[in-house]
Length: 333
Ligand code: MEV
Image (cartoon, rainbow, N blue to C red; front, top):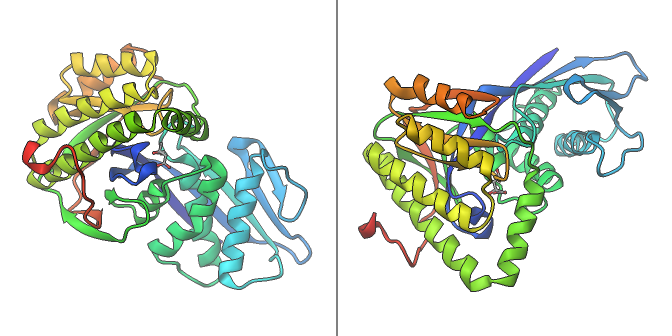
């Protein structure tokens, strides 16, 4: 029997603009995780996927439509077997479970696919690198999200904070001082595909305006990267607030998210914004450790169905190659 896990993720800065080539910063969230267990099965059994959370049992190779929840799971298994060079479906049972809430901006699809790739590959005799896992999960992200930037599979597979630019190589960056986040859930499911599609339509109709907003978001990310490296927590909070304003401009915020964000700021958060695709899902608030509980309570009091406190204290952030940004350069951070 082989068991593998994968964490959730939160985007600190740069969601949506990252789809258009701007940088973004995301961190793994280890308080929630997906789990995949692979067990040998008798000859002739085939490969059966069981996911109790999704009320799903699916045999690989049996008919499945593209809108069936089993479809991305089957695709992940098939890509992994192909990568392993296995042509005959092995006799196995794959049991999948997850505490990452679905369609709430915490990377549930990437976490489940990552756990499956790791468990299956290890059970069949090969330990993939984080890069290999990330690349194997990316096609599943396309099924879930349509035109994903690749940030979710990267942060989940590498399990490190990432500074991410689509299609660029990664390197590491020092985090000056650990910081604390409260992650509050509106309880509203919001599929990433829909929000990303709506932003694309807005961008197609008003390309100059959206490009300017994306440039501004990209410049905020550059400043945030500097603030993280320098341990300048107050500056980081202001940048979150500024990023939230731009997410409101591109119409991916919502009344429920803004109520939680307002409650967090009112209870002493240094800054707050939605995280992920938006519309529903989760928000994040940057907090001093002594205020974390009060902010979490305030967010719950404002209607959050859940509030997680997490720390970003890793020594390294994974960063992409330098990206030129025209509007808000480091001198203006
Ligand atoms: C989703 O977690 C983040 C988005 O920027 C989409 C993507 O990057 O693929 C909204």
